Image (cartoon, rainbow, N blue to C red; front, top):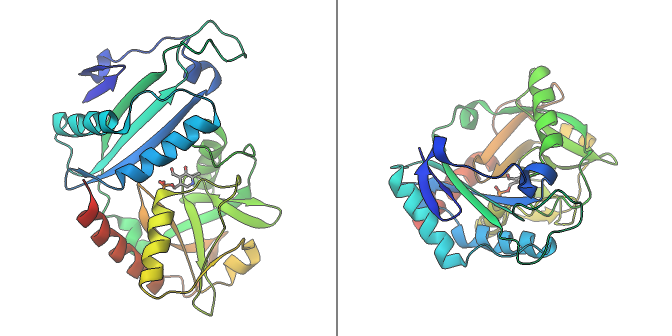
Length: 283
Ligand code: PLP
């Protein structure tokens, strides 16, 4: 694989960052994951808008403008012959002598990108559905910023696997916030699409925005409100969204079947609509 590190495209085993990089020492870094379909980037400007916001919230300098970042993404996709998968991009505050205090403003941010090939459209979980377990949401209180502080979500996913499930849904005060790396939805008996409203408790998913827009266009009723674990357990359907999973049905929560235990119609339809739209609008 060819990767990108601070202005240079190089083989992955030659990509180097400093041991003093603040991303490594303090998780002082933000990231984005843009999915690639047919060799093109899905919702690139949405991801870049969120990157700018994450950087702004942390007073971190912009590593490059959107046009330059687009060129780097495209070059990396081309060099790796990537047809389907994702481009991972990480920006850190750069390397500086270890100190909790942010380094001087002229510290050069570090910018790293790599690609990951994977099947996004043909996914076994799209037909089998996912099993999730609920776990307490022990993350910090600014989950709206896409930082690389991913230890707890990583622990949660590992615990979910240990319990024989695919992923974790995180719970705060009895209400589901989101999945370990995705946004969470339910469809109660009345057919409304329910998902937690944006707040510092969840990441504003780029796929979430797209799916809610497409659901609205398709005439679905949408209710952005918190939902409890109990309500999820008695829902007709449940599903998740993210750039790497698009829309995937959830068929089991804490060992209890959701609906009839098979992927629901809403999730199936939204997945199909989303993929069609993503293919059309990818750049
Ligand atoms: N929530 C969390 C905690 C995530 O890590 C992610 C993506 O990685 C999402 C939601 C979904 O966001 P997006 O649709 O932009 O991939």
